[in-house]
Image (cartoon, rainbow over all chains, first blue to last red; front, side, top):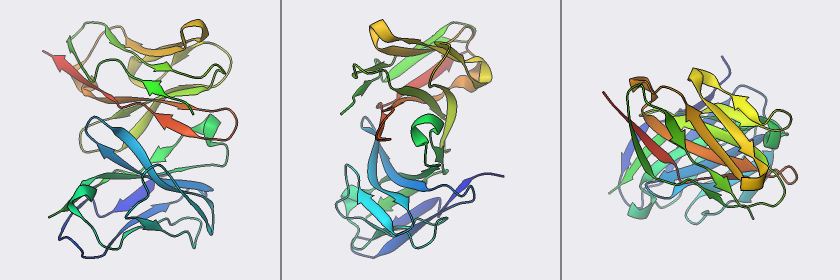
Length: 114
Length: 113
């Protein structure tokens, strides 16, 4: 089944403790992206990757890191999480022509930073 | 840059009534247009999309949307709401060049029995 898999689904952590949210897709998509979803703000892009070893900042990159060492994986790293990073996170992927195709989304990771 | 406006962050309809969720975009150049649905505790699923061709687009679960260039709109409709339609709905637009994607802030649909 074609899918984007995120782990974990739920995560509670403490301020300053490094964490990684994993994202993997099995569709050989070139493009991958991370979004955060907050009430009233919709989806805001954090980082995206056009292909292996090519990443760039989205609209809200502060406090986040990403890497794209393999085509299928695009982990999101929070080096020192803070409470304002409490949010619902989505990974998404798309083939090169995402304007025409749209995104496939993962099921989300609900992160709480206390 | 594009902007996407979804009028009404919360919409309530009775079961069996018409569903109308509004979406307007800002570009003078017609973009590609999408509607996504997010059921509770799930990710976003593609409901329907308009790229080229017929301006009335049919999607899954009986939803459809019509692209109206003169109104820069892409409103989502369903003739008869079901309880299972209760979800968050996101409109998204994509430029035909540059591959940027822009989401609206979402509309939460409640279906009243």
